[in-house]
Structure formats: C-alpha cells, structure tokens
Image 1: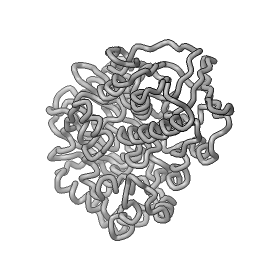
Image 2: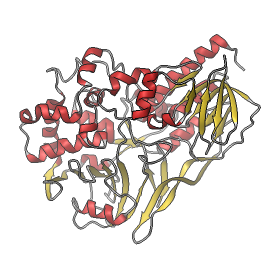
Image 3: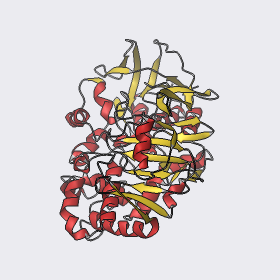
Image 4: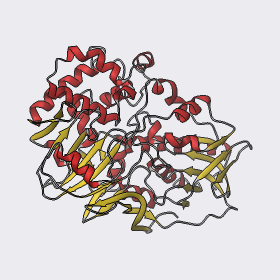
Length: 488
C-alpha cells in the first residue's frame, strides 16, 4: 500500500530559497516527500501510471479501490506534480498551483472528502493598488475597488465577441466544443489580435489599459501575441462571464492546509499501489497484444495491461511511443503549449498591509499582492523568464518599482519553465491548438490512456482540471479492463 503513514517533512530537490547576501540554495522542505519503494521487475500490473501529479494520484486511488494492481511512477522525488507546499519560517508557501474555488467541482469534492478548508489571499481585497505606466517608469497609486469595476467593464468589451459575452462561443465551458464552429473561428486569433480589434472601442484611461494588459499577460504568463484568444474565452466562461468572479476563482482562495496535504490524502487512500519516485520513463511499447512494456531510463522493463500517461504536455515528446502516437498528438507535443512565466514568494522586512499591484508586459513583474494578514509576504508573477528569481537583489529592485522603500528578506520559488520534467507553468494554448489538438490529446489509444491538467475539458491548467482528467481516464481504463481482463 502506497503512502499511508509515510509522509515526511523532508527536502525535495525542487524549488529554491534565497536570503540576502547569500547564494540561492536549491531544494525546499515539503510534506509530499514520501518514502520510495523498490521495483520488482517480475510483477505485472493492471495499470502503470506515469506521473504522480493530481491526475495520476486520483486515477491511482480510483483504480486501486476497484481492486486493480497499480504501479505509480514519478520522475521527481515527491508527489504532486506542479504543486507542492514548502514549509519554511513557520509558514506554508505554495510553490506551484495554489488557488481553488468552490465552483470547481472536482477539487471541491476532494476538499469535502478530506475535511480540508480554504483561506483567502488578503491582498486581493486591498483598498489601494500600485500600477506601473510608461514602460515601468511611472508609478501611480489608485483605489482598487473603483478601478477594478472599470477594469471589469473593459474586460467585458474585450471578451464580448457576439454581444452576449461570448456565450455563443463557450456556452458550456466544461464541454468546450459545444459550439465548435465558433470555437474554431476565434481560435485563429491571438490575445493580441483581439486587443488590436477592440483597442479604440475600449476608450480606456492609461491606468485601465495598463491593468487590462497586465491581467491578460498574467493569465497566460507571457506575451499575449503568443497566447490563444479562445483560452481567454474559456477562462471567461468558467468565471461566469464576469471579471470579478473570474479573478475570485483564479487567485483568491487557497487550501489552508496546503496542496501537499491534499495530494498526500489522496495517496493515503490508495490500496495495492506501488510508488516509484525519482524514476523516469524512456518508452512505452504497445506492439504486443493485451500488454504494454514500459522501459525506464535505467533500462528496467515493466509489464502492464494498460498504461496511463499523465506527464505535462511540454514533456510528452520525451517519451518514445511504439508505435507512434496519433499525428495530432505528435504535432502539439513537438510544438508545445505556451511555456509560462515565473511565480515567487518574497518575505518583506516589515508588513505593508493589504496591497495589490499590476504592470503590463514586458515588465518583469506583471502582478503581485500580499498574501498574509499583516502583509509581510508577497506573491508575484512575471512573464516568460524575464525575472531572475534566484537573485534577491533583482527581485527587490523590481518590487521597488511598486514599493520604493521595501526590503526583501528572502525569496522562494521554482523555475517550472526549465524544469526538465515539467517545462511549463499552467496550461495556455497557442492560437489554433485548442480546436486542432485538444480532443486528440484526450483520446485514448488502448491500452495506452492519457490524463493531465494540460488536457482537461473544463479547468485546464488547474488542480480541478487535473482531477477531472484523471477521473475520466480511470473510468475508461476500468471499462477497458472489465472488457478484456478480470480483476486481480
């Protein structure tokens, strides 16, 4: 049995911590470091799951509770994928995926199941905010509430392609191809293309334009010329076609006990699951009937009846599939989705209260806000790789554009963009990829199945989407095994 009672607060190799006048040190303590198990090559498994993020974990739980023999293989030295809670200086810091909402059905079910709770990131409700103008050279302090409403109206105009707030494009956001013809039409556009279409009609002040461009860049974590406009409309629909509601779902509430606590709880419920950590998969061979051979980078071979691949989209190309995958899977795996940007946590030398800030691309920090009650911890986001998060002086300098006198005591984060096992932050597709490739990515090629937060139908790129995708694949695998094999 994997996981039960084996959680340890040890240092993972992921993440970094940087103190003033010190070099950054790699590795952060987290509860999702668990005791590794040993591989027995002579065993055969009903399901071999590649990746122990939330998709892999939820699939392992569901299948094992149906008496399937499951092997869970993870390249990292911890579970959780693109989420983990670092514990440092008496606090919990979410290094990857963080915020959830009660309207996200799959994650809220798990929150209820395990008796977890949520806490608010306080800076989202700040009275005042800082906005950078003129390429980051001019600082303006404005009230958040009034300008947030005005920004919401600008976002409505940006999103309203059909006079009903894109409801004819995304009427059912958890079934994103309900209006396929309209999806294909607007999937040709980048986010920048759409902005250029409506720029004059928006009739914005400099402050509101800076805020709008900052939010759009923040959402896809890069240059909006590279982000697909349909992915914006997907978020817009999931946010009830309202900017304030959308932001509340994207960045306001997080798991009080930590994402690692949720990951560990799911692992603890697994039965008859073997977990291998720090183990990379080289190839998946499905040329033999009714079996799959998984070859590890170590050269070891593992035999299974089915395989569930849950790796992030941008590293799918690193696994060799025999025979080759569907051509549309190959296409997007080769090109990749948007790579995303940076996220960091900074501990300030003194509390500043509730605070919020925005700056348009290409400022190295596009959004930042205080997270805790007194305002001594800031979470910040930046596009692409423009901020050297491991250089505390650089982080402090960029924060000083918004807060001229603030001093930074330490910085925590992780570069997901260059992590060889991840190669991206949250999911955002390039123009044309959603209509051309998403359904192909979701389609199983028995006995090989696929799941990931990067290929979910609803909250793609979120914990909820990872759970959705893993649950769907677990159901498909169970049906396949019921048809072809008896339970072991």
